[in-house]
Structure formats: C-alpha cells, structure tokens
Length: 423
Image (cartoon, rainbow, N blue to C red; front, side, top):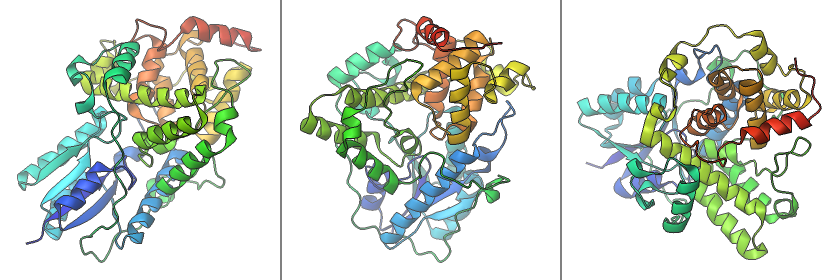
C-alpha cells in the first residue's frame, strides 16, 4: 500500500523554504495538501471587534489562490474546506487512506488549542500528527540555549543569538510533487462567504501570495529605494523606511530565512546600510516574541488577571476608545495614523508605537482594547508580535529592563512635539 501524507497548511502559504512540505514529499508516495477556512477566525471577539478584518481576509484569499496556482502548476491542487479542522480530519483520513499528518506548530493559545483538538481526533485513529517549526529565522534546536532558558530581555536574546546561533539555508522549491488522486478540490470562498457584507473595491496595501511576496522582495533589494531611503526614525514628520514585508511574513507567504539570505546577498553587493539592519532586527523581534510565547504562554503578560481581561473585558467601548478607533481624537498625528490603519490595514512600526502610547498613556485605556482592535485591522497581524508589543507599551511585558523594548519618555516627547489638540 502506498503511503499518503496529508499536509495541513495554516500560516505557511508557500512552496519555498517549507521543510514540512519537502519532508512530506520525501517520506510519502503522494501528498494531500489541505487548507481549512476555520469559522473561529471570522467571528467577533469578546472585545466586540472582528477577529479578522475585511482587509486581512482578502489578503488571505489572495494568498490561498496563489498557493493553489503553484500546486496546479505542479500537476495537483490543494483541498479547500470551510469548517473546523477537528470536525473533518477523521473523515479525510478514512477517505484518502492517510498514513500521517504534517503541520506547522503555532504558539498562540487559540492556535495551539486547535492543534491539540486535531491531535486528539487523530490519536483515536492511531494517526500521527507531526509538528514542524517553520515561522522563525532561527530553529529552536539551533539556538544557543533551550527554550526554558531563553533570555527574557530582548537585548540579551539578540546578543547571544547573533553571536552563537546560525541561520540555516533555505529549502528549495520542490521540483516534482506526487498528489493524492482527488476529483473535487473545493472553491476559494468570497468575502461574503466568510461573513463580510461588502466586497472591497480597491487595493488597500498589497496583494497576498507567495508570488507577490517574492517579487516585492526582489524589487525591494534590486532598486535604489532600499539603499537610498532613510532608515526608520521616531519623528512625527517622517515615517522613514519600511520594507513592507510583514504581511507576507505573517501568512507565511514569505520565509524569514529567505528574507535574511537575500538581504545578506544585497549587503555583499552594496555594503552595509541601516535599512539592511532594520529588516534583520525586525526578523529578530518576530523570533523573540514567538519564543517568549513558547516559553511562557500567557504568563508572559505580567498581569494576574490577564485571562479574565481577555475572556470578559468591559463590554462597551467608552467615548475615548471610540474616538481613537474612529481617528477623531483631535491629535493630528494620531488621527492621521489611525485613519491610515482603518483604510489600508497598515501603519509603520513607529506609528504603531505612537498610537498605542496615546491610547494607553494619554487616554488611560487598558492596552488589551488596543491590541484587540489591531487584531481586527492589521493586514500583517501576528498574535505573538501584536500582543507582545502592546504589552511592552503598557509596561506589562517581561522585557522591562531596557529601553530597547519601549521608551515611554521618548514616545511622549514625540506626541508633545506634534501639533496637537487633545481633549
């Protein structure tokens, strides 16, 4: 009997540098790629915000279409299912005679809970769920310390990792893939199918998908814009340089290692530059927050009642929170950034720090409300980075020993320098 492996795609929507896919192909006679449109990611949260906003939902659909096209060019397809994964795996295993299931491990509580539910279902059928870690620049086994000993202070994590760890080479795109025979692969839903009332008419930020990600990365490093644009500065009148790679990284359309090695190639051609360092620093911050969630879970947040705040927040938004969301605080810079976030799903990292500082330290609103709103609006939402950054702004994260994480005094000065008309 031939061995068939089901490859469960989640936030890893690419063919390049995909160890899970490469190993599945190597260890099987044929693979069955599957993606679930899990309804739990398209509901409202306890904060009365959407778990996934319309802009990010469209980016997801574009990314799925890109992945489907890539598989079709290899002579196959990806099975698309609307529903909870744990409700379908038992039937899929039996129908396609699956011997093993591969997937990428996540770190946020909600996503790990989904994995645990699937693992329970498969265990009853004596099917192994094999975990891979493909979202970070550094593999955990290549770090100079075990997960339990990872420094909680980012500066220490950065110093030891850059000094003692290695970034592995990327896995190549598979040249040939043998697919499980299947007649009906499912349709990519529209926004209305996911519960959104209106379609988006214009491009808001960028187009989802591995092909778009690789094209953007290549053009970014090949053009003078990367070299000659000024590095990011926390000033009210200049947003500075942004690579704008984060949305593709969040969905796994782009591998962090792919970015790292192409930046290194560009450095070899053009020499060192602050913008190169800025991109690599951003990759390290992504790793840091993911590893912090892996190490601490919700204990990363230094609030004894954090779980209660998430499960049962104050139901109604107060007037100040509504003003912040609607870009009508009266503070010109904050409102400009919030309007940009609402319209495009993206603002630069300095802008995120600024509007978060304003909500938490000027309006005195609990930081979880801002984090939940960003979860809805950001096209590049990543649970670990989003909630970790907001916790740092509020002073409840674990890295409180240095200003590398968040400098409140500096952010308040920026707010004061900008022309303001605060309530």
